[in-house]
Length: 293
Figure 1: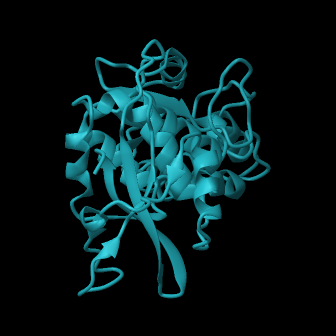
Figure 2: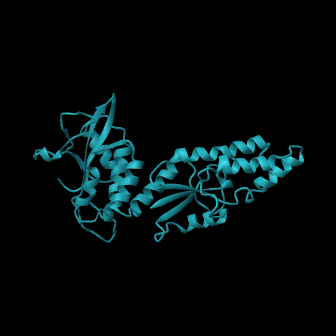
Figure 3: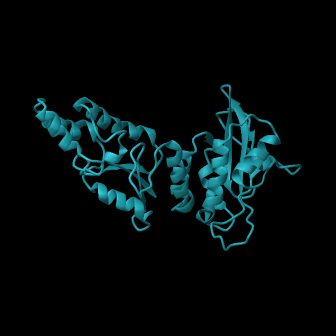
């Protein structure tokens, strides 16, 4: 599912500008937003009336006219050239108006088009509309879409790994999703996302079993070590750790619920992981997401 971040005048830090230079600085910031949200399937759309939208008072074009009236001739022509060539370069800024972008964000995910819109409002607020204003609130939205709209194993894995970037994933980790109990990984995406978020957000220090208790609490599911059973099938190759020796990934989270709140079944699904110090930093390694090994 595509997540489309919608931008317009409400995406600026202010709506009234004391100078043309100040106005230009706000437009220059738009390109930086693309660098802040690089998760898979994230796109950006700008209202095609961004310079004429006047929710907060005078529109951008009206303010430019005032600057010109004050003696700075030619500002409108200069601004329009930079708008296309610089400020809105590589944005979709011709398809929808600001009000249309807002309406799409209010309606929620569009299953038919496999997309959802969310408006970026860091400082300025519009009564009755909810968007996101920082990395944390966007992460919550992205994780909600990941949980509730996995779409397919490929789509889920691509988006998940691009978002939970504090984890090192085994080279064959994607294929493990295909072997989940119940046959369809997408039916369990909510529980798995909660567990993967816990692994990603927790700063590991390799204190066992305390570490596992903390992760289990964050995820809301049991997190244990293997015990006395045979662990040979829990050894995986992680070249980030060693080019020669296999890595034992015996720790596991147990995301046992399906997405259906009416389903009381207990599913023996697992996420197998371990910790390892790499270049002086403790990293979380995930080997398998799905089946009970």
